[in-house]
Image (spheres, helix red, strand yellow):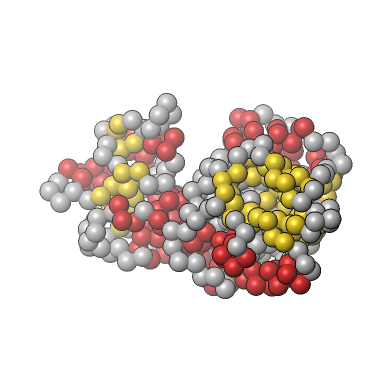
Length: 375
Ligand SMILES: [Fe+2]
């Protein structure tokens, strides 16, 4: 089997394929590495069958679509992805035939809804579903993250014995890989806790989403123009990958974001729920934007401030046309308690809106005040 980890830096890409037929797939290519990787593939007489991103990346620009256009090989993500320009949507259990080798697709959501793991023999390419040792796993508090789904995904690993090897999408300690057996003993994500305890633990360590990540997500989804030749963190003076990693806490993926997020967020004007409701009742009612996830907005466990328009935070960059066209029109942003809405408000201000207010205390506060809600 051809199996190669590319990149000694914090972001890892992989070439996986068949020694006999020289057919390979490329996994998680970085935007800035595409040219070099394709030259290498050609120079070594390899044929590129497929390019796979293990998920919609938030911390760096993917080179997946660019590599597909340059090479002619199809570009694939998990079937649930919201990325545009995807040639193949991979379902759980799909087996990719790469020459004489077989690569299995395992849906492992949690870090993102579209996270997948690829299994080639005993190699597990886990993307950001699982990192090594104290790095734990990719953040579960970014847009689309779901700690309960991540716990469920971890249970799927029970089918694999200890000799399997974990090859992560990032490593911040200079490690390359480790056996699943070792990870089961040292990785905090394998602590024997219930699903409910896991969710509580992850909520306790949740951090805000850095605003610059929304732009990266939008670029990788194909809903904004990608900055193809630069790493997002370098471009935006955010901490480089790993510098802000919080080992064991799962707060990795170049996250942290305090330095880049605190400035614009600190200056966003707040309104309390009563004031937001009063403004909504007047003539020229402001637009009320709810940036939570759909399950929080409606359904058995959802509810929202009456008249709120749902655009989940991760989708905001691609759905700006749903807001009032006049940049002077007032927009009130609400989430659960005021964190995500602050991120969204900062994003809107950075993209030209003049009158944006964050609803302090969020929908929780709205409900506590007895203001009208709907489901
Ligand atoms: Fe990620």
